[in-house]
Length: 317
Ligand SMILES: Cc1ncc(COP(=O)(O)O)c(C=O)c1O
Image (tube, rainbow, N blue to C red; front, side, top):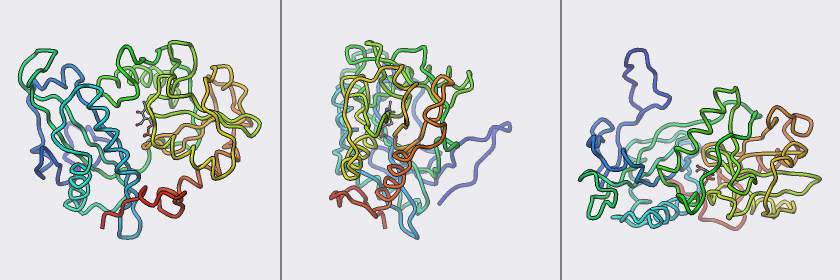
């Protein structure tokens, strides 16, 4: 059930809250899911999180790649040396039960988070408590436009010896926030960041694919990217569609002469890019391969196309 918003001083939150939140093994009211001001993660970014999508299907709700998201969450915690109290299976169960408690059946977003709680200000957080929570809320689109205007950010993507981009670490997102705000203030929809080798890494919350003469490429794992679940899905779909796909370093200038460029992410879905640094990509319209992959992806998340992965879609009810 979705709860009416309380508006504070004319400020309207972007998301609609739901009745219940799961926190540390209990289902509690949204308003009761609060944390102490000296929570370690609030000050130091010591948390890991996930973004998962649910798609309304009649009176049912379909969750896409639930297990893969929770396994990545556990692995992100391992990278950060944050102790986890719950297994991927237990969190998956908690997630499904939370959605049922909220009786949510429309398109939604699921945000699990595991973070270092309140004890003190020691950066080593030895013996500090770990808090776990899952929040769900209705969600339709991250980008409201069918074709994106993107720029190359002046901010460099963080890299493994700093804080590993392959883990979804709360603190990592300051890097993404800097790039995203700069892009927004300059009139762009999204920013792409270069890695320390000057090659394309990824968007602030998306991976990138580039198409030239029918061949598709995407930066490899070593290019300072998150191992995106949508990226992986698109790579499998490309094989199914017999589109040649390679993982290799991509130069910034390749984007200017590409036939098609698109971004992939759980929140963003498949997001076509129509300009890069104000240079028109291809003919400035959503390209044919992007279009067919976008259509294929829509079928996959609705369980109509499985590519042999019957476990990718979880029915909630
Ligand atoms: C930095 C970053 N890159 C890529 C992605 C795309 O990953 P996924 O497809 O698993 O959502 C995300 C979103 O989670 C992200 O935050």
